[in-house]
Image (tube, rainbow, N blue to C red; front, side, top):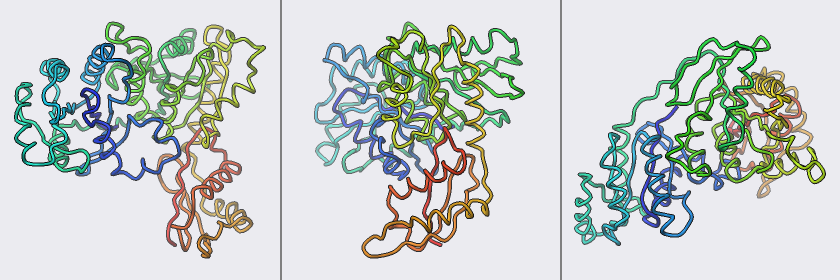
Length: 433
């Protein structure tokens, strides 16, 4: 699990440019799957070998200036609660504004490391202008230019210095995180599971900040349920603040094996649910989608088939995901949901023997070889599954650089057809033989 760094500040000071600069360093994000932009406010970055999650709070606020003031305060408060370090960005061109002072006031009370980044400092005159930010009372500042990157190194050196080490807890038990937007029924789902059979061995509160771990034993299968539901402080947050559920889900998702993504049938698979889906997919977690409150939906206008098709349209190309229609209130199919999560977990930890893999895949490749590129033919000779804790495959060939995305997708689909990987993202690497 990695530490979380949040970037706060008023609009248009260059937070997103800075954020993009940091996450570009990891190619994983630049080319990972269409839909990277769908969650452009969350990314992973590393500096000096230390990996951290980066949250750009700016991407979440829409609204006029007056709404804005309130929202930005909420976000800063949330960042203060959730992040391990905070980068507060200001803009040398506009100098110290009222809103900067408000944010600074909130940040001065915090006992977490706060770094004041003065953006758009790209010449010596501006270096001098930056002095006025001492007035914010946050001590030293870091002059930088997020467009050309000057000064970002010094800031990051200082940031990674203070980030805590999160030890991976060596729990032998698989972890299932129940995620989704507020009011989708996450708590009721967990209560329904634990309510009737007092199977719980322990309740460990506060394992990951304050999402609650419940040991659960059923169908002869033991696992940890991570509930991200019981962790909303009502006073701090309006129910629908997208940023909030995403930020809260980040830790739970990074830390689990399978995400049970819950949505309210009447609200549909909306932007916020999609954000959480792509977050789980990018972190290579198993995913089960539960459509809750299905009993309340008008059946004339909506069939299970149509609803499923709609969701699959949105999550392309990763459509091999179980979608279950449940009702937590009437306990309809909730055990099926857990069985499915268990299956997905098994798929995620599945190891295929190299010999068997080649026996199946090589004839398929021979029948449909990669298309020639610039008159060059690519020959794939051998494939193997890499020893990681989720499915990654390496295909060895003479010209890996000429294999395009569509062919990788073809290989992925064939792997899915022949070996059950339902609910699990697969990564395919082309390597030089």
